[in-house]
Structures are given as C-alpha cells and as structure tokens.
Length: 217
Image 1 (cartoon, rainbow, N blue to C red):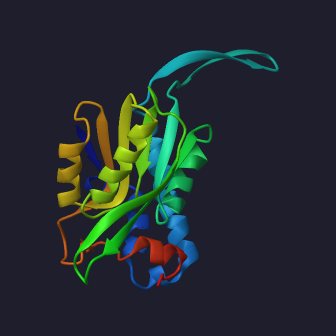
Image 2 (cartoon, rainbow, N blue to C red):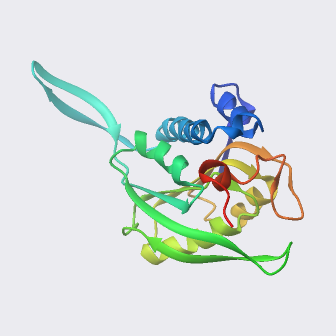
Image 3 (cartoon, rainbow, N blue to C red):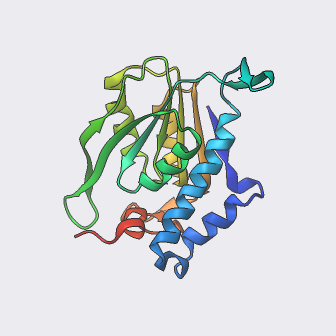
C-alpha cells in the first residue's frame, strides 16, 4: 500500500494547510471552504499521474492531434458534510467522474464514548472502477472503514484512493489493516501524531464541518 504525505515535500499545498489550521484565518468560512477545495484540486492533479493512459486522436479544425488522456472510470465518494468542499475540489478536475455520497456521524453515549453510524448512501455501481474516497479529517479511521463497507454494496472497485487533508497516524495504520493492500493508495496533506480523548486529531484543526458550515447543535 502506497502512502503519499504531501507535507514531506515543499509545495503551495502547505500554504493552504497552514491557513485552514490557523485559528485566525478559520474565522473566514468562505476562505476555509475555498482552501479545502484548493487542496482537493492539487491532490486530484497529483493523483491523476497514477491513472492509466492511452493515446487518442483528436480532430482539430486543422488536423489530428494525438494526446494521452486517462482511461479510468472514476467514482468520487464523499463522507458528508465536512467532505463537500473537498469533493468539489476533486470534481473541478475530474469533471466526468461519477459521484457518491455517504453520511457518517458520531452518536455519543457520553462525553467521550461514541459509535459511528451510517444512515444514507447514494452511489452508482463501482465494479471495476477507480474509487476515490474523500474525507478531510481521518481521526480514528472508523468513518472511512464504515463508508468503504457501504460502498462495497455497490460493487468491487479495481483500485482505491483514500484522500484526506489531515489524518492521524492511528487512522493511517487502521486503514492499512482494513483496505486491500495491493490496490489502495492513501493521500494525505499531513499526518499528525495523535488523537485526544475526544478522538480529535492533535494538533489537527478542529471540527472541519463546523468551520466550513457553522456549528451544529
């Protein structure tokens, strides 16, 4: 299984990550959402380098141009609600992709204990396709595991790309155990060392859904 950690290399992506982490910049929800989208766009570009390509002959007004373009049938699956701007970033580049949406939420038993519940899935068939599962924050990996299980009710993909902005090392380790080893790639803008007692990533950035769309009750 390949793990791509963008924080290990210098690029403009690091600037957008620094801004979504910054408590002062976070006050601007529109800027927060746009930075999430930008990170998705950059990841989509980098991910596209891993796809299968073939040469197509394109008719121009003056002749024929031979161009290598991707052959992958893409399905972008997103965990609601925090994943929506991240999803949009990928969709801006993979504009012909099919789309899937899964709802996953924490149902708390008390202040520290919770179960993760899946209530909704809308997805095309994914048999033999390239599945991209996006979730901006991977804390424990539990939501990603359940969302992947829900997606498997729609078929078996040929390859899987797990895309996250900030993941904990615990979540990365968990995904490595749960997902198919040979055909899964994990893409992260940053991998943080730990989660706290409330299962939030440290240093992380807080609650991505609340920062993007406002606090929930």
